[in-house]
Image 1 (spheres, rainbow, N blue to C red):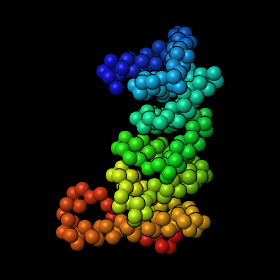
Image 2 (image 1 turned 180 degrees about the vertical axis):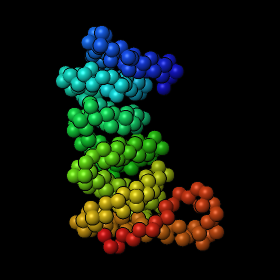
Image 3 (image 1 turned 90 degrees about the vertical axis):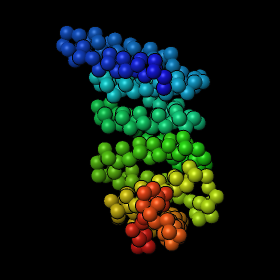
Image 4 (image 1 turned 30 degrees about the vertical axis):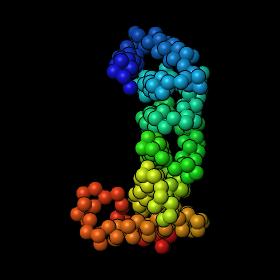
Length: 271
């Protein structure tokens, strides 16, 4: 993002979060002003017609500034809310990994703002899950594609951290199969590009973190899907063998500083 665009967005944030929006004498007029400004952005920005990556990221950031920083009465107007959600939907279907990555990051800031985020969560979570499920068929081949997938998973984890116990269970049930779908079998791992290998390791690391937190869900999921269980056990075994081979080769000192493999202590044979 250029310095000029960054400065403009900072200025917009200052205006949107101005004390004028809370002062009794100016609140009503300021709210009308901000609604008009947001409506203008939404009217003149059509992401389906935008060719510039910068335009998509900067305009979505501008909308997010209103959603995160403005008084909720500015943005919780049905006509504006519907258009904002539609802009996010369009960007979530983008084929550009840079745009998609920034969209996920913006949602990570928006979702915790409970005063405005509920309709966005309800409308966009399914799309996020669908995009991440697509990764199983087409693994990332560039670092940018990898980063987009990782930010997508962080967005789902943001929802998990916000959810009550019942909804958290449903989200974990969605997340675990997605992570397992990122795993590569031994043959595919050997020939896969580095971003796909990194995604494989990212998935293993997160499975090792999430699994022990939700053991009953994990056990039930593994019991209901022999294919997922076999895929996970194969990945765990392959990683352990890789660690042993590298240790035997006398590279343990180097691995201690920066190891691409994950030291696994959990035994999945009981799941």
